[in-house]
Every structure is written in C-alpha cells, then in structure tokens.
Image 1: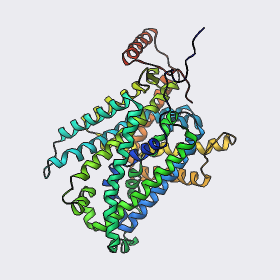
Image 2: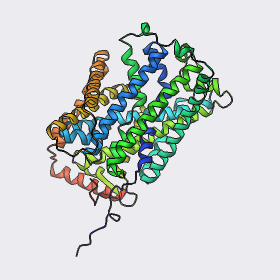
Image 3: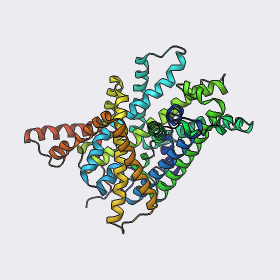
Length: 475
C-alpha cells in the first residue's frame, strides 16, 4: 500500500510564526528609515510643528484603518499571498495578476533597493565624515546586505523570524533613545514650540497632500503579515491581535518621537537638517552620536528582512495558482522555504542597485501601491455584499472600510492631478501586464519544441535547487 506521509514529514510551509514574530514582522517592516528622515518632509509641507503632529496622527489612524481591513481579509481567506490572493478571490484573476506583475516588475525590488541603500549609507557615512562616502562603496555594502538577507531567508524560516524579532527590539530601542530625552525636556517645561505650533495660516492645500505622502511612507509595510498567512499559528486570533498591537505601538512611538524632535530642535533647525536623527543625537548624546546611525542602519536592515520574508510568498502563491512558472511554487525539501521565489527577486534588486535608477521607480510604485490597496479593500466590500454568509472571524466596521477605501482612491486621484507624468508612466507599466496575461498566462501555448526546452530547464533547475511541490495543503 502507498504510504501516506504524516503532516510533520511532508514538504510544505510549516506554521512557525507565533504572535511575537507576527508583531515583530509588522513593526520590523514599518519602522525603517522613514521616521528618522521623513519628519522634515512632513513639517516642510504642513507649515507648522502642531499641524505636522496632526498629520502624523491622521496618517497613523488611516494606516490603522487599512491594517484592520487587512485583518478581516487575513481571517476571511486562508491562503497566503496578501493582496494577490484577495484580489483574485474578490475581483478576479486579471487584477490579481496585475498586482503580481507590478510587485515583481518594479515595486518590491525598488523598495528593497532603496532600503538597502539607506542601510549602507547610515552604516558607511560616519567613517567618512565630514566627506561624502564613495557611492561605489555604498552600493557594494547594499549588495552584501541584500545577499545576507536572502541567504538567511533561504536557510530557515525560524532563523529569519528570530532575526526579525531581534531587529524589531533594536528598532524599539532606537525609538526609546529618542523619546526619553524628549519626555525629560517636556517635564522640564520646554513646551514653547508645541504651544505655538498650531499655525493654520501657513497651511496650503497644494502642499498638504505631500505632507501626508511623507507620513504614510513612514507607516508603510503593514500589509506584510498577510503574505505569510499559511505560516501563522492560530491565524484567526494572531493576525488581528498582531496588527492591532503593532500599529498602536508604532503610532504612539511615532508621535512621541516627533514631539521629542520639537523639544530639542526648533522647526527651522529641523528643516535645515537632512538627517533629523543625526542632528538630534548630536544635541542630546554628543559623545555617543555614532550609536544613532548604527541603530538606523539596523532599522533599515529589519525592513529589508521583512520585505524578503513576505514578498516571495506572494510569488509562491501566484505560481501555485498558475500565474507564474510552477518552479516558483516549489519548496526546498529540507529547509521548507520557498527557495526559488526568494532567489528570483535577488538578481532584480542587485541590477537596480547597480543601475541606480531607484528613486524614479519609487515614485512610480507609490501610485501603483495605493491603487492596488484601494482595489483590495473595494474588493472586500464587494465580497461582503455578494457573500454575506462567508465566514469572517474578524469583521471590521463597515464605516472604517468605506472611509479607508475612499481616502485611498482620493490619494490616487490626487497623485494623477499633481504629478500626471510619473503617474502616467506608472499606469503604463502596470498595463503592460494585460497583454502578458491574455497572451501567455490565460492561454499558455508554446510550440512543442519550445515547450520541451522549457520543461527540461525547469526539471534541471528543480534538481539543482532541490525543490518540490508542497505535498500537504496548508490552506
């Protein structure tokens, strides 16, 4: 008789992510270089210290609304893959494929490249002060950082998860180092900047959206937990709990960090600084200022690790659903990691780092990112209407979902109005996936000769990487 493999023997993605690693994945991905860089952009476009704090609070609330919508989606649908899975289940295969296409064409590689460059810059530049660090050295350190992250994630899910937990605590330590001196200054009565900060006369409607863009960038990354849904222990409990705990923590610390900045620096001094955290450290910890760039670098590294931990799972699920070559839906026979999906993203990121055209792609990806988030929550609302009896262990209030979806579409429309050139390019790059879907994915037909070559290459690649299809269904 054919031997039936037990669950602990079969090749599949194990459920190894408990509540603490889940919280760490969100915090570790959200808290990167943004909170140490973007306060200048928020203040510049909001006009005053008080209004900038209001922007930070509203960005946190909006991000919390979106995260709660994703908590409902993560408990309603049992597959990993995040937005790809939810779009496929609610709006159909074409929007899901376009999300997959955009993600691995430019959004995720561009984001990973940007974060790795920020990591390298904060790590290297203190050794060259007051001169600028060589750009070649920064790129080399970035490539080394990406290589290490990919190696850890290919080696073990447990190791990658523990790395994320460690880096998340490091990030929180960095934030505490900023918050504590700020609170001490407040206790001593240094509140003049905050009391005089609410000057609404300096607010202009053409710049205010840019302030929100900067704030929302710092909060970005709260969708990552949903990409690993099949690997979370007790997901119906841990997904909503992890999202609520992590987002409340991030929002509170972000507000306290900005208050701390204003107790040590005036708004004019903050605007003159290109690295707010460094200026703060030089004022508060003159003898230990080197610690801050190291902690910021580690924060960036945590975001990079979270990106490579979650994003390949989207590709893995897309390949499993037939929207990508099947080799990328295979798992390493001993490591139980989606090895092929992890390795695919690596050369794309390295090429972007070498080429250097990352910032323009980030501009493109901001539009695509918010557009597909808006589509995802719209799909959730449509699915609620069409299938009211579908099990939803966690259900977000309809008002929150409607507000978040409307604001997302408003952000998308505003970007089309304020920057039509880059937005148009982003639309064009996204729409290149339509002919690919209809000509290749939907009706996959290759000449017999090409098909045999394709199958032969896939077989040899499978043997080389030691990967097979998952043997046990995990959803």
